[in-house]
Length: 94
Image (cartoon, rainbow, N blue to C red; front, side, top):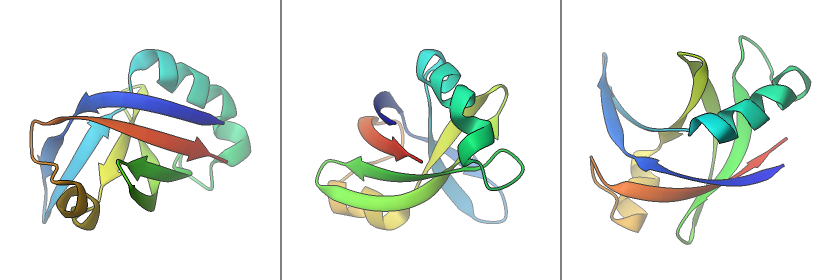
């Protein structure tokens, strides 16, 4: 399944800062239908993603009934993405 989402980059401050984009509800619902097939444990779903021309691999994290896409620093630097920017992310699930 391929899906393109748009969302705002936000930061979660834990032991180290991480940047995420929340998957919109409609897309999260479609992804949830595949979760039991593609998840490799505790609801985490491996994906291949693209921001602009930069390809990366990561996993969707379940959170508050939806999913978060982690944005690696290397991806953000390559595409000039900053905190609070609205970005489009293409995801390939499964």
